[in-house]
Figure 1 (cartoon, rainbow, N blue to C red):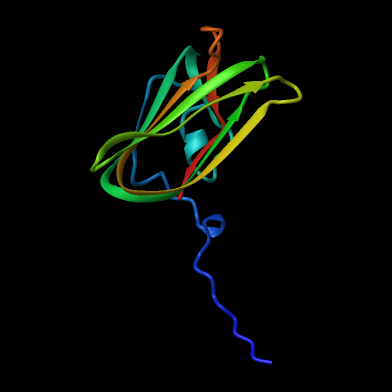
Figure 2: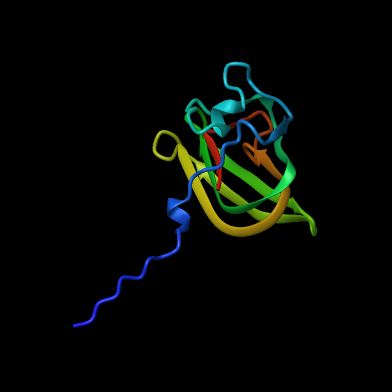
Length: 152
């Protein structure tokens, strides 16, 4: 018997999340001072982010030097109200801006209070990511939350 062990390349699942504390500029429409954006972006944080008021929110991450992105994780959490949420994720590269994903899902607490989305991608020379959150497409008074946003 002849046996050969092939060492696989690093898989998407084992890549480490990018440190967003040092190399990114964040711009956002609002935040609750008790739940700032760092709570969703920093890997050691766990509190998440909450908007400072109701309605559509935009969070933009900008890098001075373009980066490659192979994986994106978004975790949304809503424990207080039922409703259908929508988000849109866009990337700006040397080729212009393009939509990565647009998705709707329904929260129905307490049973359905968490939505975790993970995307494998091959984005090169990304200078900006923009996340638009509409916390309830049928209710303008809902407040957006984001438990986690990770990038590898």
